[in-house]
Length: 253
Image 1 (cartoon, rainbow, N blue to C red):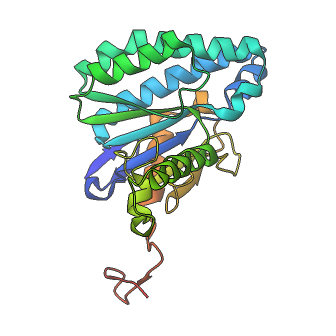
Image 2 (image 1 turned 120 degrees about the horizontal axis):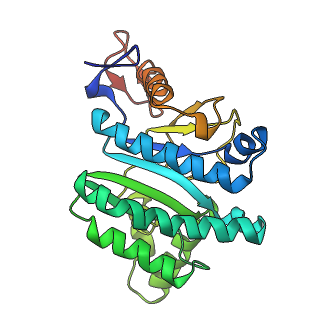
Image 3 (image 1 turned 60 degrees about the vertical axis):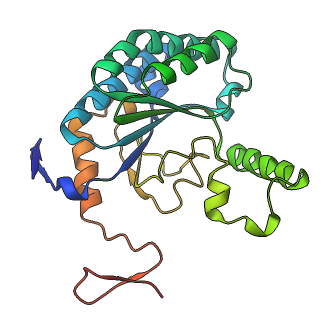
């Protein structure tokens, strides 16, 4: 058993993939009479702390929603800052990821991404490819767009005779998603008290357990993370099936 911050966690029942919707940076800054950009800076420090804390938990996959396709609607100043900060984060953290055996992954589209930032993402992916624990940044991402993009690829290959229409299954479809090597989300955590998933990993989160924290993202701590994991371990995941009387055997009907 793992005992952290007053919580006892069963390492055999930890989620394989945890995804974060990091919400509340702007509100955190506004309450302190700071700029939204200062909130984003503090939010990055929170994310870095949690990734490093994962050394104790050893959860194989952690995803973080850093920039959505809808975020392009924000002010040009804020968008420019987020693009610049993403590059600075890569520059600052890539050596540490290599040292800590973390593999960097990117889920999203590169449309509209500045070429220099795309190059940094691709270099980080290449440099960290030997890592065992995956940090997956979900950037310039929209769940509906991902599904549409996958459908377009499949339609093109069917039209070209490279793919048989009758062979398309859920497993085949998943191969056309942005990151087919990333497993489904087991636990989806959203901060700031908002009760929605905001177009985030729609396909991948089909059977995810949802956890909503009232903490604003910059205030979300390793203790809060442990609280979410403890809550997750109290749940019974049925995946559309039913539990037998002893609550151990899963029967599908």
